[in-house]
Length: 184
Image (cartoon, rainbow, N blue to C red; front, top):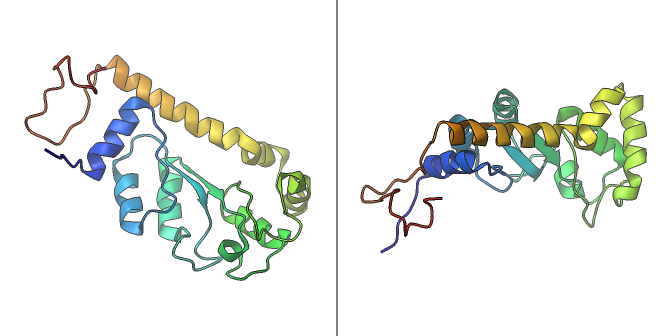
């Protein structure tokens, strides 16, 4: 017998377990549904802003606004086709992307000046020149990710303290069954 769980149940269970919800590569509908139900911040581990490049893999403004309300994080994909919708992009395109959101990811076909992580000082220098503060750069360099991770763990700890049982959709599921693999 095969059971399928709803997205809402999966997100609630991930929150209960302290698992980060990553919405990169999902549809806008899935983004919307996950952001509506998640108590913990969610992430986009490698996405970019749709307004800067209208790829279906990028995140649209209304979802970025929902992400901000959720306290989540988008880590920018430095693949040229997702930054500038072309084969060629530069560190300046990535700075424009950073002004939209957050950080990360190296790939082939990366922007000129951001070929790999050794180029991050160039990115940071560009961001400083664009008016970013040291505090902003600290958040970009990992502080925001740590903030999200701590909040995910806080939600998990609150659920554990409240003795929240595993979330299940199936009416015949017995969470108290000692042979159930989710009854930890």
